[in-house]
Image 1 (cartoon, rainbow over the protein chains, first blue to last red):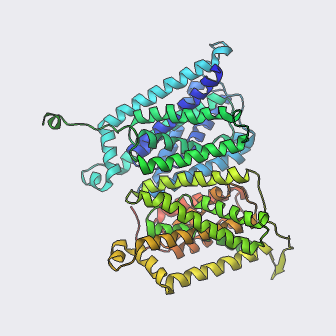
Image 2: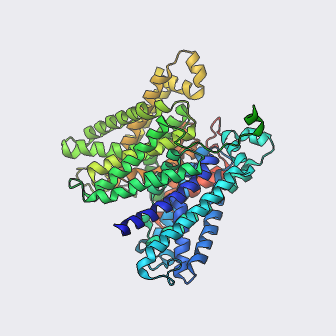
Image 3: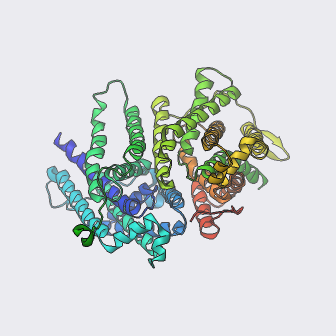
Length: 302
Length: 286
């Protein structure tokens, strides 16, 4: 039971990091990233392959963060001049292409066989019985760092300007803000966080293959952001640890439901994710936690 | 070479119907419907149900599937998109991916993950002027060309077609002239659902049915629509044909499983070089 709880919590921490990344890109910046799973995959494979090639885990992770961040920024360049609809399909196109590439370029990625034997950080220093708990602690520390950095960013002038470009890029442009450069940085920074999520994914399973990465990862992240409230990092954190925990926990129910087999239960869970996305958008479009707003002192006095 | 071009044109025709449906909903509603793939899957499976469970012959089952696809599309519009009216296009975009997830998994829940095929007799490919032509390719050719001609007549010569073009052009002006938006939107969704369903059946004939089938076609369908210019439905058809031939010709240099990568590269180039599409739509969202 404890082992199950630790494993689930690690997954929730990884999903929540992806949610925070999406919150920076979409919540604050209005940049729709439907290809989120592709960037997580890129992070996982960069980290996993470098690690298997002999790099120490933390160094491989740092490389994955860098690669994913740069790749995100580059992909966003394709359509950053155009409206958000285009970035959505471009990021999705990148993700699908990457998945094909990784599935078939066996010389590099071992294709569908997957990459086994990825070493977790600190694996040599702790007894094997405590390995999962140590990994969970590491994932939570990563989550805390991402949360803190993104929260500082959201309250900084950068975050404020980013919100302005989300509301009306034309006005921001007229006020002399470089919208393109801002968006590029937001998408790249979000991508770096997705690199962290991907690396943790690789460490968590110690084995990666292309089937682990799909649109479901994107859907979970969108759900966390929509339920938590667009723009609110705290909201994403809370949503991650309630809704994603419930969904992941529902894997447990396979034994309880004698009527449904595993595939049907998986379909049911994804169906509920889809319905929840739409329902929250209709009935609670701003989510449950308000985004941070700078309240000017003059306003407070009056 | 000619064989490749011919195959490419047929592939393009398969993409043309959902691309037309996508551009149609985009031009009238101003949001990109990511559930287009899932609508294709639902239609294909509905036709499969009529075909194998109810024992209808395939042409009749296809009509049944198209009717079911139209109903689902109109129903989803009433349940979801109408309630989100006035929200930004981005919100609708995200809602449509939720819809896609829900629809695809309804199919998966009922029909399971394993691939399926329609109950049709196998036929030997024909040889015409040195071309090898499958029976499925002929079916696709005739079905798609007939439907496209029908749609063109509908756009050009009927009241509802004119109303659709009017709302797409300028919804406020259309409203001033007494064109009911609600009715037009319902017809647009019904058409788009039926077109996606027909494409689903044809793709199912060409290959097999599985719950993922619509999702794998999402990227080429969007590429085709962007290539034509997202807001002009008939140009999407031309975009689909160009993409189909490009994908087929690319198999001479790239592995055939990389079709979707070709679609992505074509999309990237077109967005960088000529974002209004090959056939120059009148306007462009920035």
